[in-house]
Amino acid sequence: MPLSVVAIGRVGVPHDVTIPAAQPTFYKNLTISGGPAPARAYIEELLPDVLEGKIQPGRVFDRVVSLDEVPDGYQAMHEREAIKVLIRF
Image (cartoon, rainbow, N blue to C red; front, side, top):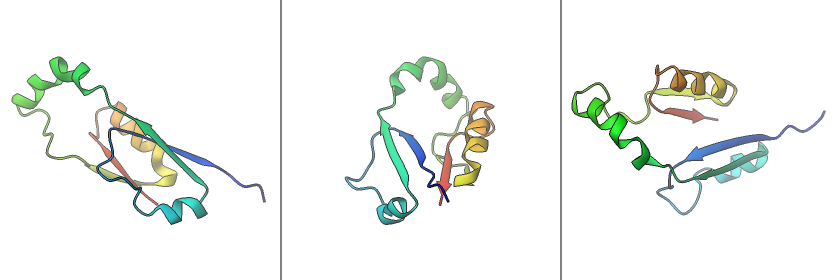
């Protein structure tokens, strides 16, 4: 059986120096990488929506998907059906 590799990209600075649950990612052959988010580039566009209550930044994760459902999570964010998606594996 061929071994598959899954890559997960994250945006933003992690709050911890280690990745939680790193051992399962090793055995599932997952690659995790990421980089900073250019949040200041979106302030002019999004701050009015926050101030008007259209976006509630306190609700960080508003959808949970499995690893197999990651494309659905990205689609939901693209279509503005989800703000941020948490992936459980």
